[in-house]
Length: 414
Image (cartoon, rainbow, N blue to C red; front, side, top):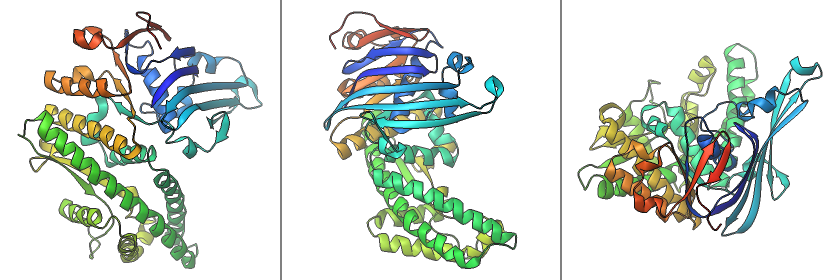
Protein backbone atom coordinates (compact mmCIF):
# COMPACT_ATOMS: atom_id res chain seq x y z
CA UNK A 1 0.00 0.00 0.00
CA UNK A 2 1.51 3.30 -1.16
CA UNK A 3 0.33 6.90 -1.48
CA UNK A 4 1.76 8.18 -4.76
CA UNK A 5 0.40 11.73 -4.58
CA UNK A 6 -1.04 13.90 -1.82
CA UNK A 7 -2.96 17.14 -2.33
CA UNK A 8 -3.88 19.51 0.50
CA UNK A 9 -6.07 22.59 0.21
CA UNK A 10 -6.76 24.89 3.17
CA UNK A 11 -5.63 22.26 5.65
CA UNK A 12 -3.85 23.58 8.75
CA UNK A 13 -0.95 25.76 7.53
CA UNK A 14 -1.16 24.40 3.99
CA UNK A 15 -2.98 26.76 1.66
CA UNK A 16 -2.15 24.57 -1.31
CA UNK A 17 0.19 21.59 -1.57
CA UNK A 18 0.80 19.08 -4.35
CA UNK A 19 3.28 16.43 -3.26
CA UNK A 20 4.52 13.31 -5.03
CA UNK A 21 5.52 10.73 -2.44
CA UNK A 22 7.87 7.88 -3.36
CA UNK A 23 7.64 4.34 -2.03
CA UNK A 24 10.00 3.44 0.76
CA UNK A 25 10.98 5.86 3.50
CA UNK A 26 10.58 9.64 3.38
CA UNK A 27 12.06 11.90 6.03
CA UNK A 28 10.37 15.29 6.50
CA UNK A 29 12.63 17.64 8.41
CA UNK A 30 12.62 21.30 9.37
CA UNK A 31 12.08 23.65 12.26
CA UNK A 32 9.08 23.38 14.54
CA UNK A 33 5.70 24.78 13.41
CA UNK A 34 6.51 24.49 9.70
CA UNK A 35 3.97 21.79 8.79
CA UNK A 36 5.70 18.41 9.30
CA UNK A 37 3.17 17.12 11.80
CA UNK A 38 0.28 18.62 9.83
CA UNK A 39 1.17 16.48 6.82
CA UNK A 40 1.10 13.27 8.87
CA UNK A 41 -2.14 14.42 10.48
CA UNK A 42 -3.72 14.85 7.03
CA UNK A 43 -2.83 11.28 6.00
CA UNK A 44 -4.01 9.86 9.32
CA UNK A 45 -7.26 11.81 9.05
CA UNK A 46 -7.88 10.49 5.55
CA UNK A 47 -7.36 6.93 6.81
CA UNK A 48 -9.41 7.16 10.01
CA UNK A 49 -11.67 10.26 9.67
CA UNK A 50 -10.23 11.44 13.00
CA UNK A 51 -7.47 13.79 14.03
CA UNK A 52 -4.94 12.59 16.62
CA UNK A 53 -4.43 16.18 17.78
CA UNK A 54 -7.77 17.99 17.63
CA UNK A 55 -11.19 17.23 19.11
CA UNK A 56 -12.94 19.62 16.72
CA UNK A 57 -12.60 19.02 12.99
CA UNK A 58 -13.37 22.64 12.19
CA UNK A 59 -9.97 23.51 13.68
CA UNK A 60 -8.29 21.69 10.79
CA UNK A 61 -9.28 24.33 8.25
CA UNK A 62 -6.53 26.78 7.30
CA UNK A 63 -6.77 29.78 9.61
CA UNK A 64 -6.21 32.41 6.92
CA UNK A 65 -8.84 30.86 4.64
CA UNK A 66 -11.25 30.59 7.58
CA UNK A 67 -10.79 34.30 8.38
CA UNK A 68 -11.38 35.40 4.79
CA UNK A 69 -14.74 37.00 4.05
CA UNK A 70 -16.04 34.06 2.00
CA UNK A 71 -19.44 32.37 2.43
CA UNK A 72 -17.96 28.89 2.01
CA UNK A 73 -14.48 27.64 2.96
CA UNK A 74 -13.46 24.14 1.87
CA UNK A 75 -10.49 22.20 3.17
CA UNK A 76 -9.48 19.18 1.12
CA UNK A 77 -7.27 16.16 1.62
CA UNK A 78 -6.86 14.09 -1.55
CA UNK A 79 -4.60 11.08 -2.02
CA UNK A 80 -3.86 8.85 -4.97
CA UNK A 81 -3.35 5.38 -3.54
CA UNK A 82 -2.01 2.15 -4.98
CA UNK A 83 -2.71 -1.12 -3.17
CA UNK A 84 -3.20 -4.79 -3.94
CA UNK A 85 -6.76 -3.98 -5.04
CA UNK A 86 -5.61 -1.40 -7.60
CA UNK A 87 -5.39 2.37 -7.80
CA UNK A 88 -7.84 4.58 -5.91
CA UNK A 89 -8.40 8.23 -5.19
CA UNK A 90 -9.55 9.12 -1.69
CA UNK A 91 -10.78 12.55 -0.66
CA UNK A 92 -12.06 14.19 2.49
CA UNK A 93 -13.71 17.61 2.36
CA UNK A 94 -14.09 19.87 5.37
CA UNK A 95 -16.78 22.42 4.55
CA UNK A 96 -17.50 25.50 6.63
CA UNK A 97 -20.39 27.78 5.66
CA UNK A 98 -21.43 31.11 7.11
CA UNK A 99 -25.01 31.98 7.97
CA UNK A 100 -27.06 34.64 6.25
CA UNK A 101 -25.97 37.35 8.66
CA UNK A 102 -22.64 37.88 6.93
CA UNK A 103 -19.22 37.51 8.46
CA UNK A 104 -20.49 37.47 12.04
CA UNK A 105 -23.24 34.99 11.28
CA UNK A 106 -23.47 31.48 12.67
CA UNK A 107 -21.10 29.00 11.05
CA UNK A 108 -21.98 25.45 10.11
CA UNK A 109 -19.53 22.62 9.50
CA UNK A 110 -19.83 19.33 7.66
CA UNK A 111 -17.64 16.65 6.14
CA UNK A 112 -17.80 14.79 2.86
CA UNK A 113 -15.93 11.63 1.92
CA UNK A 114 -15.26 10.52 -1.65
CA UNK A 115 -13.80 7.36 -3.13
CA UNK A 116 -12.83 7.56 -6.79
CA UNK A 117 -14.68 10.91 -6.96
CA UNK A 118 -17.95 9.37 -5.77
CA UNK A 119 -19.46 10.51 -2.44
CA UNK A 120 -19.66 7.76 0.17
CA UNK A 121 -20.54 7.46 3.83
CA UNK A 122 -17.66 8.21 6.17
CA UNK A 123 -17.47 4.60 7.31
CA UNK A 124 -17.15 3.48 3.66
CA UNK A 125 -13.99 5.56 3.40
CA UNK A 126 -12.42 3.59 6.23
CA UNK A 127 -10.28 0.62 5.27
CA UNK A 128 -9.21 2.00 1.91
CA UNK A 129 -6.08 3.49 3.48
CA UNK A 130 -4.44 1.81 6.48
CA UNK A 131 -1.86 3.50 8.67
CA UNK A 132 -0.03 3.01 11.94
CA UNK A 133 0.85 6.26 13.71
CA UNK A 134 3.69 6.71 16.22
CA UNK A 135 3.54 9.74 18.51
CA UNK A 136 5.59 10.86 21.52
CA UNK A 137 2.27 11.04 23.38
CA UNK A 138 1.57 7.33 22.79
CA UNK A 139 2.67 6.60 26.34
CA UNK A 140 -0.75 7.95 27.32
CA UNK A 141 -2.17 4.67 26.05
CA UNK A 142 -0.71 3.27 29.26
CA UNK A 143 -1.10 6.18 31.67
CA UNK A 144 -4.20 7.90 30.26
CA UNK A 145 -7.93 7.31 30.82
CA UNK A 146 -9.86 4.24 29.57
CA UNK A 147 -11.49 6.34 26.84
CA UNK A 148 -8.12 6.74 25.10
CA UNK A 149 -7.60 2.98 25.07
CA UNK A 150 -11.10 2.35 23.72
CA UNK A 151 -10.42 4.96 21.04
CA UNK A 152 -7.23 3.14 20.09
CA UNK A 153 -9.10 -0.16 19.71
CA UNK A 154 -11.89 1.41 17.69
CA UNK A 155 -9.63 3.32 15.28
CA UNK A 156 -7.39 0.32 14.68
CA UNK A 157 -10.23 -2.15 14.18
CA UNK A 158 -12.20 0.18 11.93
CA UNK A 159 -9.29 0.29 9.48
CA UNK A 160 -9.53 -3.48 9.06
CA UNK A 161 -13.03 -4.60 10.00
CA UNK A 162 -15.97 -2.77 8.37
CA UNK A 163 -18.48 -4.97 10.21
CA UNK A 164 -17.03 -3.87 13.53
CA UNK A 165 -17.18 -0.23 12.50
CA UNK A 166 -20.82 -0.39 11.41
CA UNK A 167 -21.79 -2.34 14.52
CA UNK A 168 -20.02 0.19 16.75
CA UNK A 169 -21.88 3.06 15.07
CA UNK A 170 -25.23 1.29 15.58
CA UNK A 171 -24.36 0.43 19.16
CA UNK A 172 -23.55 4.03 20.04
CA UNK A 173 -26.89 5.19 18.62
CA UNK A 174 -28.80 2.49 20.51
CA UNK A 175 -26.91 3.35 23.70
CA UNK A 176 -27.85 7.00 23.33
CA UNK A 177 -31.53 6.09 22.86
CA UNK A 178 -31.50 3.67 25.80
CA UNK A 179 -29.84 6.21 28.08
CA UNK A 180 -32.38 8.85 27.08
CA UNK A 181 -35.19 6.47 28.05
CA UNK A 182 -33.45 5.58 31.34
CA UNK A 183 -33.27 9.29 32.22
CA UNK A 184 -36.97 9.64 31.49
CA UNK A 185 -37.78 6.65 33.68
CA UNK A 186 -35.62 8.07 36.46
CA UNK A 187 -37.68 11.27 36.27
CA UNK A 188 -40.97 9.35 36.39
CA UNK A 189 -41.83 9.65 32.70
CA UNK A 190 -41.25 7.46 29.65
CA UNK A 191 -42.55 3.97 28.91
CA UNK A 192 -40.91 1.04 30.64
CA UNK A 193 -42.36 -1.26 27.99
CA UNK A 194 -39.95 0.22 25.44
CA UNK A 195 -36.84 -0.57 27.48
CA UNK A 196 -36.60 -4.28 26.46
CA UNK A 197 -36.54 -3.23 22.79
CA UNK A 198 -33.45 -1.06 23.27
CA UNK A 199 -31.90 -3.63 25.58
CA UNK A 200 -32.26 -6.42 23.01
CA UNK A 201 -30.64 -4.28 20.31
CA UNK A 202 -27.86 -3.32 22.69
CA UNK A 203 -27.17 -6.98 23.49
CA UNK A 204 -27.01 -7.99 19.82
CA UNK A 205 -24.69 -5.16 18.83
CA UNK A 206 -22.62 -5.11 22.00
CA UNK A 207 -21.94 -8.84 21.89
CA UNK A 208 -20.33 -8.48 18.47
CA UNK A 209 -18.14 -5.64 19.75
CA UNK A 210 -17.06 -7.69 22.78
CA UNK A 211 -16.16 -10.66 20.56
CA UNK A 212 -14.18 -8.66 18.01
CA UNK A 213 -12.28 -6.74 20.68
CA UNK A 214 -11.43 -9.99 22.43
CA UNK A 215 -10.05 -11.48 19.22
CA UNK A 216 -8.09 -8.31 18.40
CA UNK A 217 -6.49 -8.01 21.84
CA UNK A 218 -5.65 -11.73 21.92
CA UNK A 219 -3.72 -11.44 18.66
CA UNK A 220 -2.13 -8.13 19.61
CA UNK A 221 -1.02 -9.49 23.00
CA UNK A 222 0.69 -12.46 21.40
CA UNK A 223 2.62 -10.29 18.94
CA UNK A 224 3.54 -7.64 21.53
CA UNK A 225 4.83 -10.24 24.00
CA UNK A 226 7.07 -11.80 21.37
CA UNK A 227 8.51 -8.44 20.27
CA UNK A 228 8.99 -7.16 23.81
CA UNK A 229 10.49 -10.35 25.23
CA UNK A 230 12.70 -11.35 22.31
CA UNK A 231 13.72 -8.08 20.66
CA UNK A 232 13.54 -5.41 23.34
CA UNK A 233 14.52 -6.98 26.66
CA UNK A 234 16.57 -10.07 25.70
CA UNK A 235 14.16 -12.30 27.59
CA UNK A 236 14.37 -10.28 30.80
CA UNK A 237 10.84 -8.86 30.94
CA UNK A 238 7.47 -10.38 30.23
CA UNK A 239 4.72 -8.11 29.03
CA UNK A 240 1.04 -9.00 29.17
CA UNK A 241 -1.99 -7.26 27.69
CA UNK A 242 -5.15 -7.82 29.75
CA UNK A 243 -8.63 -7.20 28.38
CA UNK A 244 -10.87 -5.62 31.07
CA UNK A 245 -14.41 -5.74 29.62
CA UNK A 246 -17.53 -4.51 31.37
CA UNK A 247 -19.60 -7.53 30.41
CA UNK A 248 -20.72 -8.49 33.91
CA UNK A 249 -21.51 -6.89 37.25
CA UNK A 250 -21.22 -8.13 40.80
CA UNK A 251 -24.39 -9.73 42.12
CA UNK A 252 -24.62 -7.20 44.96
CA UNK A 253 -24.27 -4.33 42.51
CA UNK A 254 -20.88 -3.31 43.88
CA UNK A 255 -18.04 -2.01 41.77
CA UNK A 256 -15.97 -4.72 40.09
CA UNK A 257 -12.30 -4.87 40.99
CA UNK A 258 -9.42 -5.68 38.65
CA UNK A 259 -9.52 -9.43 39.29
CA UNK A 260 -13.21 -9.53 38.35
CA UNK A 261 -12.51 -7.71 35.09
CA UNK A 262 -9.51 -9.91 34.29
CA UNK A 263 -11.58 -13.04 34.86
CA UNK A 264 -14.30 -11.72 32.55
CA UNK A 265 -11.69 -10.82 29.95
CA UNK A 266 -10.21 -14.30 30.03
CA UNK A 267 -13.69 -15.80 29.70
CA UNK A 268 -14.43 -13.57 26.70
CA UNK A 269 -11.19 -14.45 24.96
CA UNK A 270 -11.96 -18.17 25.40
CA UNK A 271 -15.53 -17.74 24.12
CA UNK A 272 -14.92 -15.07 21.45
CA UNK A 273 -16.42 -17.33 18.78
CA UNK A 274 -19.52 -18.22 20.78
CA UNK A 275 -21.87 -15.31 20.14
CA UNK A 276 -24.81 -17.03 21.88
CA UNK A 277 -22.85 -17.41 25.12
CA UNK A 278 -21.64 -13.80 25.02
CA UNK A 279 -25.12 -12.47 24.26
CA UNK A 280 -26.67 -14.57 27.03
CA UNK A 281 -24.15 -13.27 29.56
CA UNK A 282 -24.57 -9.63 28.46
CA UNK A 283 -28.36 -9.92 28.53
CA UNK A 284 -28.37 -11.41 32.01
CA UNK A 285 -25.99 -8.73 33.26
CA UNK A 286 -28.18 -5.93 31.92
CA UNK A 287 -31.18 -7.53 33.61
CA UNK A 288 -29.28 -7.73 36.91
CA UNK A 289 -28.46 -4.01 36.90
CA UNK A 290 -31.67 -2.72 35.32
CA UNK A 291 -33.06 -1.16 38.49
CA UNK A 292 -29.73 0.51 39.23
CA UNK A 293 -29.52 1.80 35.65
CA UNK A 294 -33.00 3.30 35.91
CA UNK A 295 -32.10 5.03 39.17
CA UNK A 296 -28.90 6.42 37.68
CA UNK A 297 -30.38 7.21 34.29
CA UNK A 298 -27.53 5.55 32.40
CA UNK A 299 -26.33 2.15 31.14
CA UNK A 300 -23.65 1.02 33.58
CA UNK A 301 -22.19 -1.97 31.72
CA UNK A 302 -21.29 -2.67 28.10
CA UNK A 303 -18.38 -2.21 25.69
CA UNK A 304 -18.68 1.57 26.04
CA UNK A 305 -17.00 1.10 29.43
CA UNK A 306 -14.33 -1.41 28.38
CA UNK A 307 -10.66 -1.04 29.20
CA UNK A 308 -7.36 -2.89 28.80
CA UNK A 309 -4.01 -2.65 30.52
CA UNK A 310 -0.39 -3.71 30.14
CA UNK A 311 1.55 -5.43 32.90
CA UNK A 312 5.27 -6.10 33.02
CA UNK A 313 6.53 -9.08 35.02
CA UNK A 314 3.06 -9.22 36.59
CA UNK A 315 2.97 -5.59 37.77
CA UNK A 316 0.74 -2.86 36.38
CA UNK A 317 2.86 -0.86 33.95
CA UNK A 318 1.05 2.44 34.45
CA UNK A 319 1.76 2.37 38.20
CA UNK A 320 5.07 0.56 38.56
CA UNK A 321 6.80 0.81 35.19
CA UNK A 322 9.60 3.30 34.54
CA UNK A 323 9.31 5.78 31.72
CA UNK A 324 11.70 3.66 29.67
CA UNK A 325 9.65 0.51 30.29
CA UNK A 326 6.46 2.31 29.30
CA UNK A 327 8.02 3.53 26.05
CA UNK A 328 9.30 0.03 25.28
CA UNK A 329 5.85 -1.44 25.88
CA UNK A 330 4.20 1.13 23.62
CA UNK A 331 6.80 0.42 20.93
CA UNK A 332 6.07 -3.31 21.19
CA UNK A 333 2.34 -2.58 20.98
CA UNK A 334 2.72 -0.44 17.84
CA UNK A 335 5.03 -2.92 16.13
CA UNK A 336 2.52 -5.65 16.98
CA UNK A 337 -0.17 -3.52 15.36
CA UNK A 338 1.87 -3.43 12.14
CA UNK A 339 2.25 -7.23 12.15
CA UNK A 340 -1.44 -7.73 12.91
CA UNK A 341 -2.57 -5.47 10.06
CA UNK A 342 -0.24 -7.14 7.59
CA UNK A 343 -1.43 -10.58 8.62
CA UNK A 344 -5.09 -9.59 8.30
CA UNK A 345 -4.82 -7.76 4.96
CA UNK A 346 -1.82 -9.28 3.20
CA UNK A 347 -0.04 -5.92 2.85
CA UNK A 348 1.87 -3.60 5.11
CA UNK A 349 0.18 -0.43 6.43
CA UNK A 350 1.77 2.97 5.82
CA UNK A 351 3.86 4.02 8.82
CA UNK A 352 3.66 7.58 10.16
CA UNK A 353 6.27 8.54 12.77
CA UNK A 354 6.06 12.01 14.27
CA UNK A 355 9.26 12.98 16.11
CA UNK A 356 9.46 9.64 17.92
CA UNK A 357 12.93 8.40 17.02
CA UNK A 358 14.55 10.63 19.67
CA UNK A 359 12.28 9.01 22.30
CA UNK A 360 14.17 5.71 22.25
CA UNK A 361 17.63 4.52 23.17
CA UNK A 362 19.98 3.08 20.55
CA UNK A 363 18.66 -0.48 20.72
CA UNK A 364 15.00 0.43 20.50
CA UNK A 365 15.70 3.03 17.82
CA UNK A 366 17.46 0.37 15.73
CA UNK A 367 14.48 -1.99 16.02
CA UNK A 368 12.05 0.76 15.04
CA UNK A 369 14.11 1.84 12.04
CA UNK A 370 14.39 -1.80 10.94
CA UNK A 371 10.59 -1.95 10.75
CA UNK A 372 10.57 1.36 8.91
CA UNK A 373 13.02 0.11 6.29
CA UNK A 374 10.99 -3.08 5.79
CA UNK A 375 7.78 -1.12 5.19
CA UNK A 376 6.35 -0.42 1.78
CA UNK A 377 6.02 3.24 2.68
CA UNK A 378 6.89 5.24 5.77
CA UNK A 379 6.94 8.96 6.54
CA UNK A 380 9.01 10.29 9.43
CA UNK A 381 9.36 13.78 10.83
CA UNK A 382 12.37 15.23 12.65
CA UNK A 383 13.81 18.63 13.45
CA UNK A 384 17.34 17.25 13.23
CA UNK A 385 18.21 14.70 10.49
CA UNK A 386 21.54 14.23 12.23
CA UNK A 387 19.94 11.87 14.76
CA UNK A 388 19.67 9.20 12.06
CA UNK A 389 22.63 6.97 11.16
CA UNK A 390 24.37 7.72 7.82
CA UNK A 391 23.49 4.35 6.27
CA UNK A 392 19.81 4.99 7.00
CA UNK A 393 19.95 8.49 5.47
CA UNK A 394 21.47 7.08 2.28
CA UNK A 395 18.40 4.92 1.75
CA UNK A 396 15.66 7.50 2.39
CA UNK A 397 14.13 10.36 0.49
CA UNK A 398 14.78 13.54 2.45
CA UNK A 399 12.52 16.59 2.18
CA UNK A 400 12.65 20.00 3.84
CA UNK A 401 9.45 21.52 5.21
CA UNK A 402 9.30 25.32 5.47
CA UNK A 403 6.15 27.38 6.09
CA UNK A 404 3.78 24.93 4.46
CA UNK A 405 6.05 24.21 1.51
CA UNK A 406 7.91 20.93 0.92
CA UNK A 407 10.98 20.51 -1.28
CA UNK A 408 13.07 17.38 -1.89
CA UNK A 409 16.66 17.75 -0.73
CA UNK A 410 17.80 15.97 -3.88
CA UNK A 411 16.18 14.78 -7.08
CA UNK A 412 14.71 11.28 -6.80
CA UNK A 413 12.91 8.96 -9.17
CA UNK A 414 9.30 8.60 -8.07
